[in-house]
Image (cartoon, rainbow, N blue to C red; front, top):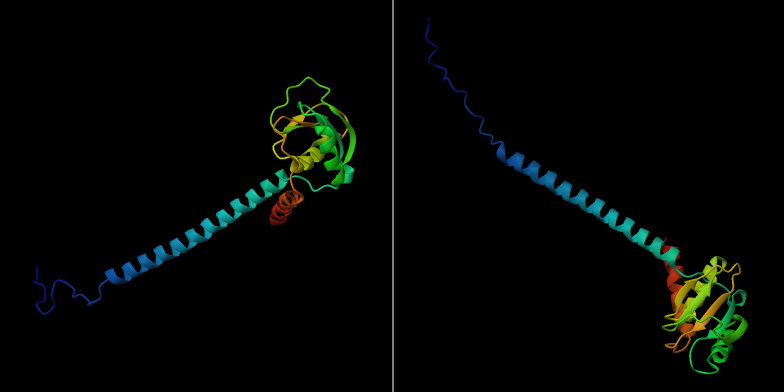
Length: 179
C-alpha cells in the first residue's frame, strides 16, 4: 500500500460561504408571505360573514307596503273606553283601511302593548303594521284572509312616529341593498 500524497490535505477547504444567513432570509420571506396570505383569507371570511348577516337581516326585515292595501280591525282589550276609536282614527290618517272597531271579541288576556292577530296570508301585512305599533306581540291564527287584527293591550302608549317608521323602512332597504 502506498501512502497518500502529502501535498494535498485530507479535508477539503471551505469556500468561505456561510449557508445560515441565506436560509434565515428565505425563512423570514416565507413567514412574511404566510402572514400576508393569512390576512387576505381572514378578511375575505369577514366580508362573507358580513354579507351573510346583511342578507339575514334583509330577509327578516319588514316589507314596505302601501298602507291602503292593508286591512285592519282594531279591538280594545283595555279598560279605557274609546281607545280603539282613537287608534283607528290615527291609523286611518296614516292610510290604513280600518274595517271594524270594537272591544276585543275574544276572551284572550292581552299583555303588553297589544297583539297583531293574523292568518298566513296576512304575515307581510302584520310585519308592516308592527312598525307602527312598537311592542305589539305577534299572534298567528288560522284565518284565510289577509286582514290583521290589532288588539290594544294595557301597556299601549301610542303609535310610532312617522319618522321612526321611515327609519325602520330605510334600514330594511339598506340591508336589502347590501345583500
